[in-house]
Length: 262
Image (tube, rainbow, N blue to C red; front, side):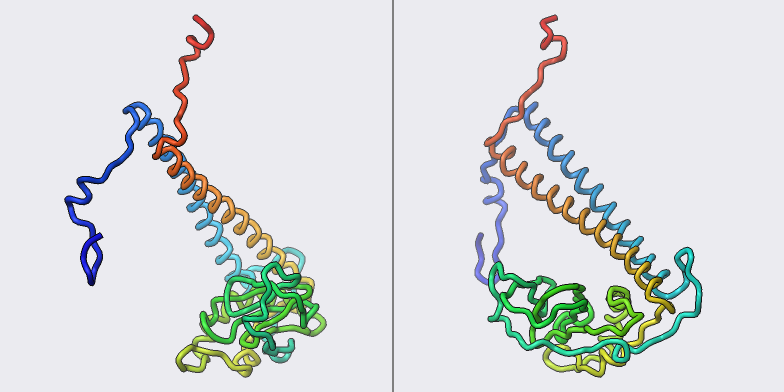
């Protein structure tokens, strides 16, 4: 690269680039193999986009009562988060994390760290109080620890599904949080913002749980597809590194008649 303020490559450098080239038929075979890999990746991306849209549509229908699951009836009610759960920040710092620790450690990130201590053993929703406001939500049932800038929503009242509350927050807490965040160097949330957040809820825990199960199954399906897409991209990258350098050569198959000695 040349230049001081902005690095760039000039035409002459591009012209002198050395590219390893196999015979023409092998070039075509390699290109076809990589094109097939691209096709698989594109189809997975399209399917993933469709499933995400379906889930978003399901959330808008199921979390508002516009669509009821079979077998349920009764009037929905609006409840304040502070009236149905206990909300408190953690006490740990980033330096408390331990690589390959025994328990999940929720910090201000999508990444769940590990730690060898736990302060909670229950169903909980974890939401950072600053940074990426309204974009990060975690749900857990079990032992875990919490960063001092992360809010742990626990101790749900009888008749309240914590997982239903989680999906409601994923769906609508973000816009509400940004409208009620404290504007400083980094947007942050205070306890009253969480306490006053309103959730539209079915009348029974069984319906809440049924809705949460449907959405959780959709999440699992999406996660499995994301894993397939990641694997497909890694395989294609590996193919390029091997096939485009000659480390691995494609075998040209003989016609079937020749293999049979005809």
